Image 1: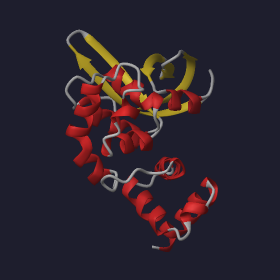
Image 2: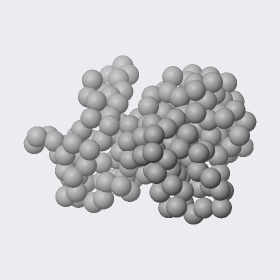
Image 3: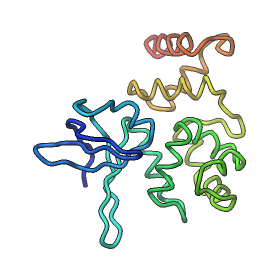
Length: 194
């Protein structure tokens, strides 16, 4: 299994990067968020990866954050969701928004993702809701605001677990009125105070 890849971007496409590692160019399928963070050719990247094997096909999927990879693997465990659909979900919605939509059974939001119909959206919620509520500390039935979802994503990108990020944001007093940067700064203070 290839757990991570670190190298220089040789080229990029709509949903992939070619990363040169030790003289070998690896084609890694990535969501748009990772594509944007990677920059252009010549930039150094580190990706958390999943090697997907099916019959005679080997495909490498990469993510700039470990939580994106974890969510990707969880999505693959849902019947009818393949790696392309899982990648598309993570390209259309941020991990926080996707977790929130699944945990709150927001079928209307999920079906806006190309390739995801009502049955698949309902199956996602049915099979993943309890896991996501536990692992991502999502309160059942309580959607995150867009600012909170972005703050959780930023904190997890800094290496904190989703549960730590949610707990820190919940401890921020008067958090509803704060801008994203202020909310993240206060959450980091809360984490540092523990």
